Length: 62
Image (cartoon, helix red, strand yellow):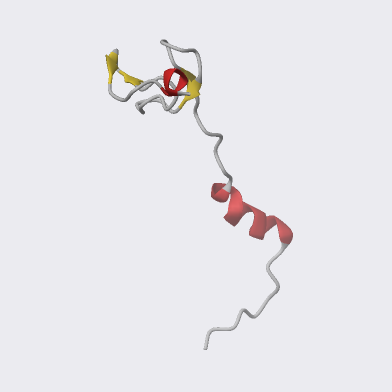
């Protein structure tokens, strides 16, 4: 079984982990209702995608 012969320093450990940082989620506003949504996704509030009505508007149902 492989066993490390020397202690890995904090610097080496952190350099190895430098690519593991989380990236923030990209959020855009819906041009129809102004709510925040993910880019290239359907707006869950108004149901619009790319200028077309895909789902019924949830605000009108309630």
